[in-house]
Length: 231
Image (tube, rainbow, N blue to C red; front, side, top):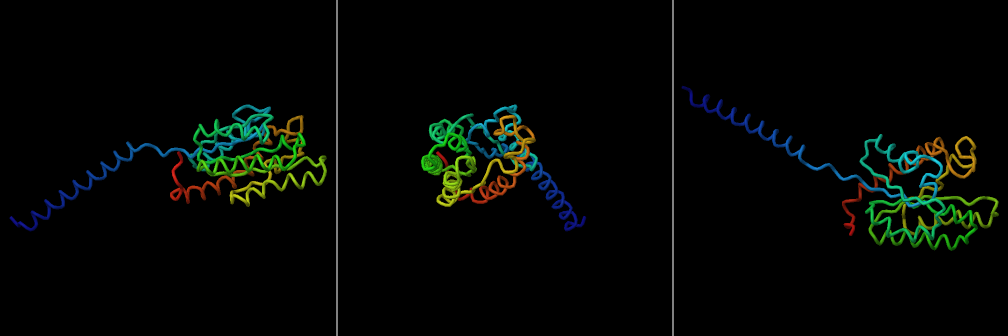
């Protein structure tokens, strides 16, 4: 018997067995590994977030989650909208919202402040409080802007509209300038009150909002390894 050839065949068989075993172990480990936790985005907002006048599954957070899932993203979008809420109400609800342990909070507040003619300085102070407290809680913040009704006059509109960019610049956070972009004042996309989007309007909002959310999700995940752990 040629020992060299015989040993070579034995070694090849052992190596093949080891390779098969390793592949099998890798498959078992892959099957037993828990799935990655979804990124949790909370939308802290008013009736636009809550989905006033539409079914829960047609509200912006639900439709946004569906759109993100269609992109293959593992994301949960939590609806923390309360119809009629002001920026002051958002401050009061912060602890309740943080109980859901969001990774990211999209702040969509201010519309009801403007409808009530609240001093823009008060709205800015409340939004500043929200953003600063979220950042102290080590939660990423994205700001969703609003524009004041033009019947309140140019001075009020200029003061109110500028709040969002000022805060975004101050805290270096992403800003989506106007939640109702492409929908405001279009009767075909709004409910009879002219203020709240209908399901078609929600779809327009989500379609326009999606690139902003996707881009900032990519940025968030790219830098998340450097983030301190949340309490």
